[in-house]
Length: 632
Image 1 (tube, rainbow, N blue to C red):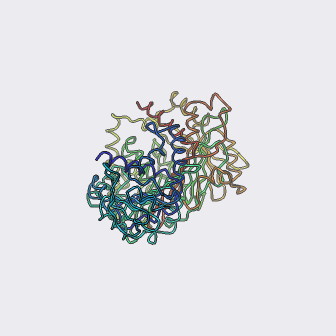
Image 2 (cartoon, rainbow, N blue to C red):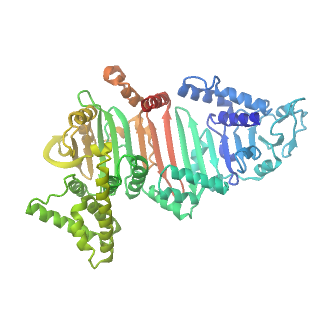
Image 3 (spheres, rainbow, N blue to C red):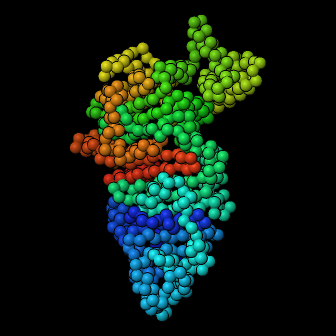
């Protein structure tokens, strides 16, 4: 049993490294549980060995992957007469238990000389016919695995059972049922893995759903799994490892449609890096920022990134602020750059696209005001009257006809917190039912926040210690001919020498302020001290220069079809982690390539694309080792 288990797995792993396939999708069937399909196996040795060498710098367990294929074909007695340019596949017709997969497995092996291949099993020339199932044996004294064999015009199908073999013989390709873009993308891949989720047993589906829940991606993701039909994973390896994942949902599934809409399906895919500086890039992000992307960002921040670091009250307010800002944008792009000498390590430059830049900046001012750790100013009559008017206006908007206006007012009143309670208690007597209900909910939520804050005073968390507030400053300056306003960053416990040293190391002497400038409908901002980068971004936006978008780097990492793209240089971060850039100016070379993740949502599926260039592989591995040592 051990040999029967290990060698088929070795066969899968060997095929997984093969070069671009010719007909991989011909072996993906609508009725099957799972398929691993690839093509052009004659180029396997070159591509497989190159991938292992590029990533690991040598062999795996003392052997190159090409040696696995040699062992596998010898084991199955298919070493003669193979078509080295054909496609190959491993098909699991149905899933009963993990070990039963050997009984439902079929291997598809391309041949160029069927007689030569059949001679290994004792068949004379012309006696092994196509379209007929044979039971074959091995040399004297040796058993042969997967002894049931059937030949099509191009491939030999082998299996341990005739039932599985007949299922594959009768099966039809799934290609005609898939969206054209998916077929095109997977047709270029070196490896395609398919799981027919709808064909999986209930206990397998239940385990899959529990796995989704363990990732804490939210109820919307979990509910959509009930509409899931197929899962696809495909890979290509040339100048980079390109790995893509795509779940395909039922077109009529309501839960799936809710998820895909949240992810941006139907929204314009206009994200790009247009206008960002062409500086010493470390990371970049671009997205079509709309309500749906904001909701996705809430899920990621709430359930994945912030759950262990911020108490519920502060986390809820932060997420509401993120939604408030994102909801007013239809595009956003950021670049994190290594600053020039004397300006700290990093500068963050961003370009925000709003329908109305003046209104967007006014909303930012309001959020900064009500989110300040000191609260609203009620010390003078003038300030008290202005802030009372603001609170009453927000309470009035709780009953607005627009859902988004009601939600925005709710979030702002929750951010104001305790100071809004007297006015909310008046509102629960309001004639408007919606306003009364929301006022009651707010009173309950604010009370919960106050209780939680009192409890967490005894359990400080590091994010609470540095929780900043933002203040629009009267100070202005001119950069690249533009009026630039400034937002000051202040902390509840005042200046701290250790914190100041830490932040100035990373963002330079201007770490305490964010620069903002309005250019038409766009708002350009910078956190950091390298004003040359900020000036370049302003000039690009004013004169509509492409900036980073015209660089070969951007063209490698981003497709215009995606709603969101994130790029990150492992090599750059590794050099910074080892402090090499700080002591060796020769190490500060412009990036030639960069790793990236891109997200695209369509009507009944989404695609997540990961791309890691060759020169980034070893850096990613080294960073993993550094992180392991640090955590240990």
